[in-house]
Image (cartoon, rainbow, N blue to C red; front, side):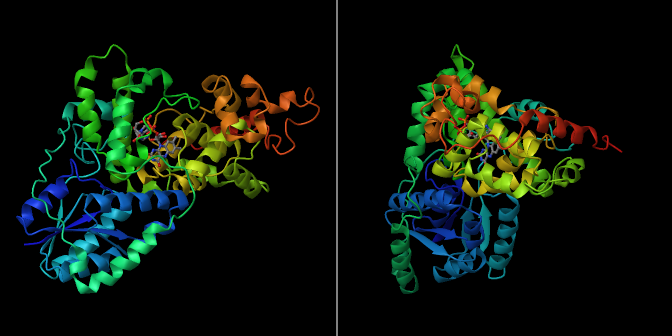
Length: 475
Ligand SMILES: Cc1cc2nc3c(=O)[nH]c(=O)nc-3n(C[C@H](O)[C@H](O)[C@H](O)COP(=O)(O)OP(=O)(O)OC[C@H]3O[C@@H](n4cnc5c(N)ncnc54)[C@H](O)[C@@H]3O)c2cc1C
């Protein structure tokens, strides 16, 4: 009997247990491949993420021989209708642990069950499913290092064997009712959402990127990963976000000959992959932390006293016009490419929360809108880690100084000059403090680049005072 594979965050064929299961179940009768463009998710996604998705769907459609059925609308209605039209009794998915995804899948499952169709959840975007690693007393982890040790001890499976021999993707156009929809959908997919310079997308591109990183920068990852001026990180985040590569594939390679590497690069990289798993674990165990601070004392403190300039400050931060080059370069990189280096994410986030005293939720929403790797668990908890109200024992009083961070991690100023054309005339690390050159250059380095919008030292003091005024834990 024909089966239905509903793709969501797993836009690949290799090492995809749900595809394998759909193939085995249909026993040669064919699999219908479906992707539903959900307006609810689309509305929260900026143009860059939508463009990444558009190109990814075209790529997946090619892999399916042009047989991917892409429909826009409520998944609840569409999955049910497609299952009915193609007469399937099993719908295969990779499990989604996100707040929205879990509720959606529950509703779809109930709807299908009413007609005797089963929603089969096979595999997930993680090497170890959230909820699988718990403390000895059965409670969930909230601190990374013990989680990492338990996660390693638990172990993860090797990539699932790829046996798609004989897999036939059903041509959706054979159903007259979908033929017309298919034509509309293809026309729609041909038009770019925006003009943005993205790396190649899709499963093959993801594997290529991983292999070139694995055979090159990985060895020096422990040294170079904090340097936004270098190509020292994997850039795999968006591929992982969309399931174009599975962490199993990456982790399995780290177990291979690379494990004997003389550098710490591979081990440090495994720890970073585990951060993604950790944050999925924390969000699954604490669903309200998608909006509220894990440490609820902070929500009150951070929501007070935004001050009269709050909206102007927020707009300057979003636009990359705070006058602090390391922050501004990051925010401009975000808008231009949908990606920002991790070190710069931390500094830009710290600036918003501890320099401008704005709630982390506002910054998280702005990131989420633009990031092509935008992921609720990593984003909301990355923000809370920086704000000091999340999982990490590291406290609120760790406040990144954007100038010192810039000078340390972009020592020659190359990164800031790349993203801020107004600073291109400034030599070396002086680009991190353009105001210092104002007098020698006869005015501002460029009339277009703003002066700093805050006195960072003074606002640091203000942030520390707010922290000191928080009720003590347990009060
Ligand atoms: C405020 C803030 C918001 C963030 N939002 C997101 C987000 O929406 N989506 C996202 O994927 N990552 C997010 N991160 C984590 C991190 O910045 C990115 O994963 C990383 O910059 C992606 O680049 P890369 O693939 O080259 O990373 P690499 O350094 O090559 O790391 C490899 C992979 O490990 C994972 N990883 C690395 N660091 C982290 C981390 N701190 N937390 C979780 N996973 C990590 C990612 O999947 C990444 O692709 C955020 C971090 C901060 C501080």
